[in-house]
Length: 196
Image 1 (cartoon, helix red, strand yellow):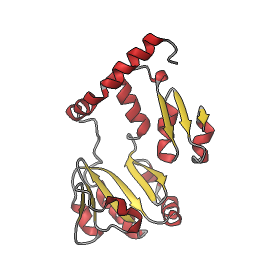
Image 2 (cartoon, rainbow, N blue to C red; image 1 turned 45 degrees about the horizontal axis):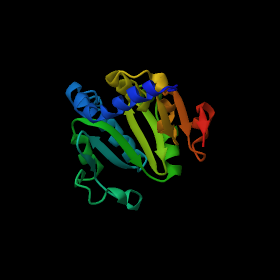
Image 3 (cartoon, helix red, strand yellow; image 1 turned 90 degrees about the horizontal axis):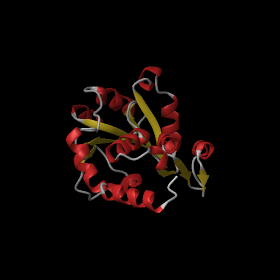
């Protein structure tokens, strides 16, 4: 790990380069969109299990309904509420991820019913109370960290990551040192270098 002043200085310079990372990522179009048409099967899944749905596009979150569990999004300019119910979400293009919203019991029941075929294409990851995130199989926080260290030319063994829930699992695994908070998901505690 970082043990001498030169290493710390070099790493500090890399942190300053983070401001440039967004531009680099935008230019390389690193963010992977879901396969065209995949939104249709995810909307059908949401309808079947009566789940609210947030659809993430590059610069906007689109939904047909905001309830009390996601009030934090109300009033943000990046959120669009469209009319026409969930069926209208099927027409969206350039989708990067989907987040289902419901009670934890409803989310876990729905996740247990995901077909093997869907699991071969998507990650269904619990991200915290009332949220289940769906990404392409090739996208997760660990992949993001690996891409970031490539861009910044940092040894991944000199990275630290902190997490608390299932969506942090790949990040904790990928980082040189994985830390989790004391109330973290037990799956993370099993693999973490440190628990607070």
